[in-house]
Length: 214
Image (cartoon, rainbow, N blue to C red; front, side):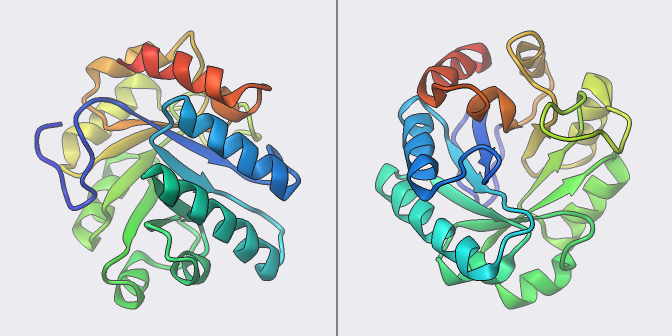
């Protein structure tokens, strides 16, 4: 992508790692896995916690803020704008059922905001509302959860890419067998849980995924 927005991403496909308690139950494991992934070339980390109390979410986010800041990488918080702001994360990632983008932007004008989208119409709406990037998916059936929406495949992903000028990150069901197909779509990168954190060695996984994306 030649034209970048204020996220300041460099050229080349980026690796966006997502994890929470299902991938790292203890705080020690969380920090260890993220440090390992970053050492292997992971570019962005998103903390994604479900059914967790605010105090615990905040503490885990604070730990990752320190780790990502030391590594010079971006940290996003899933769903919780308040926690993203409290730990001074780089941004927040919101789903379609979360706080509306317009309200999030009013509360955090300088923060980066990503939005989950499932088609070109959603993506265009998010861009017009001020999103800094969109996470498009599921491209393939996710390994980390039951599928609620039909996978869009490369074709659906390409359609979204063609309708917006902000960065697009592919989400859902990526592994070594299908990740290379992203190279021709013009997207900014791939967001993944299982391909990076489901195995025992996030650093090795990150190295291998970055090679496939290069």
